[in-house]
Length: 368
Picture 1 (cartoon, rainbow, N blue to C red):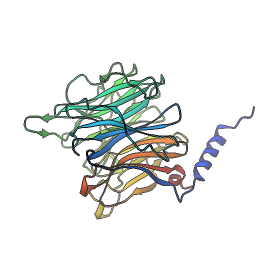
Picture 2 (picture 1 turned 90 degrees about the vertical axis):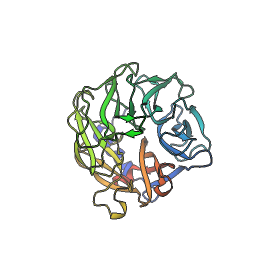
Picture 3 (picture 1 turned 90 degrees about the horizontal axis):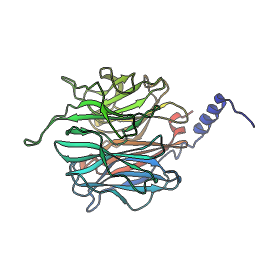
Picture 4 (picture 1 turned 30 degrees about the horizontal axis):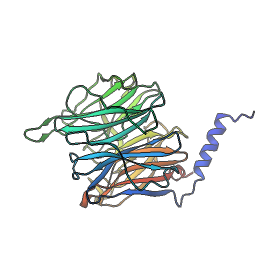
């Protein structure tokens, strides 16, 4: 039996990635545009099934284009790693909320089951993540269980649920206060994490709960670092993503502080690249951006970090339409390619109403 040293294995993987063709590296195999009776499609996530298919589950709106309009969860499938997708929706979760159901996260749990998280929006005072489980590869789902007992308006973005190497589940959320009678919404989110150590059967809130006195924090995300710490990244209107760190798997956190991820008021996404162990960042890069882009969720860019988020390099632009609205990104890795699902509408005509799947080569990003 032959043995390839780990260093050489990594070298061969990197060479395979680097040799990927650059001329067709960025593809757009699926665009879900609004249509009569379906005014918006947005906020989904991917999961790879054991039969090799990829499932994309997203929010299919029927009652309008607002975040509170009626919607259900629908699926599309790919049998070739995301190069092509099925033409028709498969309804998965009906509209069981007073407003809607939206913002999907999918996880392959350590026990092999698939966990589905989404927001059940009942009212301006009650929006909470719920969880369903599938034991038959997304053919059927358990009844939903609410992850947060206390009634409130909690925002969990799509593709934000995280399973740590220890098995702990982490849901980074922003709680927003509402005066339902006056229709007043407090944009200053109260940031915390909800944690489960029993595969989602029970949940508890992190000990650290943060809200800026004069700062606005919204839509947090979390990524696990190589040394076991967690890094939280949060969207703000203050010129960059703010970050915080946890040394105890999400229970306590450092204070949120500005980062070198320069961005408008728009969410970022960060995940670890399986083959290289680097971090991949997707965001609206506003570092030195032209005036035509300021304050807008465009361009859509990617970059990698080899030092656990301290610096970012190899910045590449995926989309740069000044009127584009690129945000709420889900990320999945398929061999040496990346799948993104993100909003890609024209801000003059809804912005969030169109979802696009983008597929590109990691070789194009590394550009070695």
